[in-house]
Length: 118
Image (tube, rainbow, N blue to C red; front, side):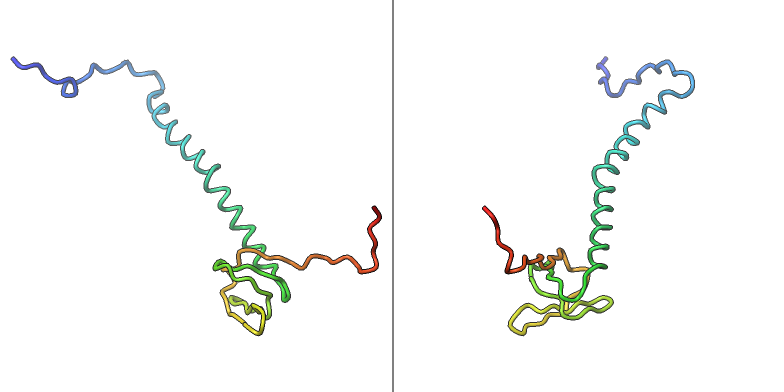
């Protein structure tokens, strides 16, 4: 008679733990993975989106912005969904407001009469 391979043989049933402990243990891995994904991926992404929305809502005329395509310009006109930026030398572009990646405000310049003491 041929031997039956191990994976075709049925294993003897293990003694069940009282209170359904096997079911709880089998659910721990998926629950743990969901918690890890939440804290490492989902939560940081939601925080980034919230900061981006706040930044876009706070832009004003005269701010220097950088678009997703790498275009740098000064805000010339604001609309609800669109922004017109002046790219210099008379070039103006209409872009969608959500394509603004970064806002670079003018740095405060020191008055000309201030002298640094060394």
